[in-house]
Length: 615
Image (cartoon, rainbow, N blue to C red; front, side):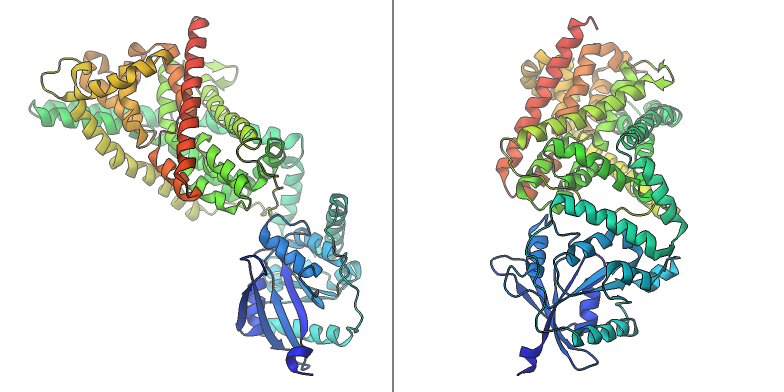
């Protein structure tokens, strides 16, 4: 019998990021043969090594999975290999477990045990778990699992010696007749039973764990409670949007006054002429009208970064998962959609984590409905101009309106997803499975670097895209020199082409003009309005853009403008990203069409509803 024929076939399995690849490379010396699973482009790695006892092993490194319920092609192939559906089942399973995440990973071990294959449980990164304060009774764990247990540090040769010794002992007792895998996936009730048993076994085996781990379980009893959890999440979001307005009032007023003072200083010390008008009415009025909203951007991202770094954001995903499933959304869609609150572009790109093409398409198409940070200057400008600075009970009315606009985007996205999943993107949704990190105090350095990156990105856009747009729009609004009104200018003539289409929803010529450059980026519309009213606003513009809009627009028009921006795809970069991620201009065109249709219908309903209500 050759060595190749005598080699024992062993499968290396475990959750993603538990150190499987590191252990595989350490045991095989990095000598791996990569092969595609028959009929699928999913890689499995095969490697050979010899144990200290002289036994030859054919080690198979399978894609990571969290349990015996496959949610992707990778996971399905890994489980089919373990179950022997592609041929002979492995003679032994090495079930790799992150020692610091015993409670999370043990349920997979119990599900694997149920199929009846011989198995060794490998507690990897055990040295790091000890360093962090874990104390695990290995004998108790073996007794509870009724399986051999060994600890490893896969990155070091010495850390793999105990596994090799245990492997020799187990292989020596493998008989020629081995229990065959059950060949089936567990039922939901079996999975729930395994989850309960995993928690019980972990509690029995873990003698001590770090303070943050114990605190995490206590806090999660409240924040993951099916009734109290959503209330806590809603309260946090509500407080965040209240803070965006109440905390930013002073800094916004300061920046607004500074922009006005700069414009006044330049205007007073420069001779009259086109350069004077360009700097005062184009650059300072256009860019300044956007930069004043920097404090609100900083406050919003402060909350988002703190929630992410503390570990709470992953809990929010689980809280939303059941709601999303009711409307047909994939549970994994929560993270891309959450990312879209910052910007739709990384949110759309993050949808790559969704395996099902139809689920991914649905997520991509509704991501622009999430209220990105670029909408915030538009919202805050209109809210500050038209919503009184009054309190409704203990709450700021302006903050309430901002919160309502964010909720409107979320509700719209969920309803559209419900429609798409039953029409153009039919597919069975899958549950969200992810590891919940322990709560931690955010690292101050990382936090401030991330906050600076987001604030500087906003300022960079103000100094590039918005600056360029403001200069171009100033030229179009100021020329020809013979124009005495906005309508006679080049910009007015362009806007006049759209005005008949937009008039039924309450939009005026100035809005029609601003929407065109606003396609470059949503916040550009604020700079465009600032430039248009600076050039042709006359004395009405002396007190700033917010006060100018109060006298130039009716309340129904202002509310319709807000409704328009809840839906409108005012961002070429987002549409280009949809094209790249879907590989089709068809879906980019579809997104453009359906979002503009929603924007037009929403603005029209709000405008005529407000007029009917006497507003």
